[in-house]
Image (cartoon, rainbow, N blue to C red; front, side, top):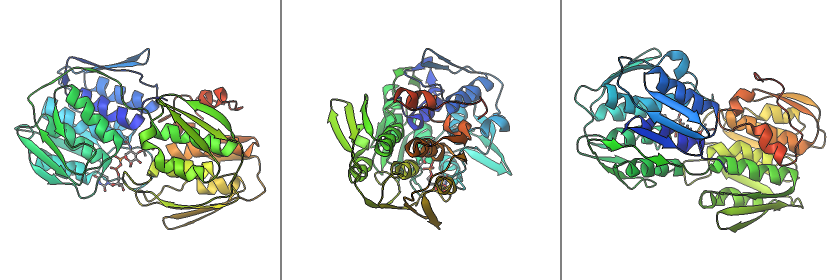
Length: 404
Ligand code: EPZ
């Protein structure tokens, strides 16, 4: 199992706050990792990915702007605002891009940083930020438990003057991993993984070598594929502690999962008609990123799936593509309904975001007909050569061109 993209990206950004060279092990060659190295190199520091080790080294330079082109490449561009304010006291950047799964504002990042002493103005797409007197510890309650905003504020608080108490924080495992990384570098963060996080700021952080946690969304992708296509797969470095909700839903369809040490044996021979109803939400609720994968896991099931999305407004971009594959699906506001229909056709399918793209791959493999999937650049954000992963598992899947 590769390391979790959503743990890795904030850790790469936070590495800029550490003195000396930080090394991140087992780093996959994802397009979001390359967007991160581009940000770091563009501001005069160094990030190099070689032999699956990513080294990050902050150097002082006059450059205090991240270009709009780079910011538009990924949502995690916003995670550079706190480290660069700490390092440069001034940074100009642009509204981040990323998967278009909803409006994705950044107000909580900005509001929290202002409470900690930053002066920030946003004019149209441009963000101009200054930190005249360093970050100051404070008590701050997030309007909602945003993963990214919690990460931004943990970073700022780690090197702030005094104690910060953050309330209504996101509790995702990727938050806990960022805190573990920063604590290994000398930060004093208590409570990550809970709603309230208390951080005693320290003046400097030292460089470390670190391996982020395994990717629970990748694990969900493999479980979905086994569930939909049948067969048997052994998953090493399996993030068992984060998978129980997803596992339990798939067990209703006949999937068998055996855990031993940090491995899982996943077996599916018989389809069991299942009726699944679930809603996505903030951790520990069912993950919004796993929603599309659950849909793909169910493509050959004669029961129904009713999925309610409560985090992002536009998470069901795959539904029209599933319809093209012969599934009966309906989206009603935030609710998605899916049942099996017999016919399926050879079709060209279009991925519009990362997890929707992965769901189309799994669904196409399960349908066994030949499909062409466009929009592979979205999938490349979070899966390193997805075609190789599934080829190893017995699929006939090829990348047609670099673009697609
Ligand atoms: C992270 O995005 C993940 N990305 C997403 O994974 C994931 O879907 C999401 O968390 C929820 O789990 C990364 O970690 C890189 P949020 P993030 O801030 O941090 C609203 C994937 O496929 N909000 O927790 O951007 C926001 O609009 C990606 O790997 C504000 O209103 O998500 C959303 O409704 C897709 N103001 C909700 O909070 C803010 O300032 C949760 O967003 C920030 C967020």
